[in-house]
Amino acid sequence: MVSDTHNHLPNVARIVELLTRAGVEHVVHTGDVTQPKTLDVLARLEVPLTGVLGNNDAGERSGLLAAAGRHGMTLVDPPLAFELGTRRVVVAHDPRMLEGRDDFEVALHGHTHLHSVVREAGRLVLNPGECAGHLPGRNSVGVVDLATLDVEILRF
Image (cartoon, rainbow, N blue to C red):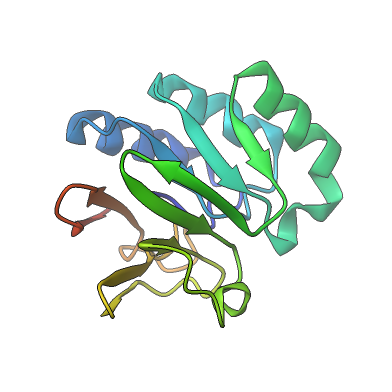
């Protein structure tokens, strides 16, 4: 999963390398893509991408939705609830959108640019951190094993 890419294309290219090497089967973006060309680079992953729009996506909403459509990606307004494998997943950009929800096994969010893994009541709430380059050397993406809910954070 990735979050807060903020059109930092060198980091997005690195994300493609990391997630390809990790053998991910599905990518979730928790918002703040900001520019359609970011989705063009993420399309190199050659796996499904599902995501939500973030607060910094409003100005490019139509372009982002068009790019997602061109690449066969799902990109919608948050929150998004869907089944991934055998897990109920909810995705939001702002973690406040998850408050009061209990209809998930895995919740994914971004917005804060801070990595966090919280386990409570058999559920996983994950923010992989940021990929925007705002925190040099602290960029990260998350890989979740849906069978075990083990989380690996890949830093770059």
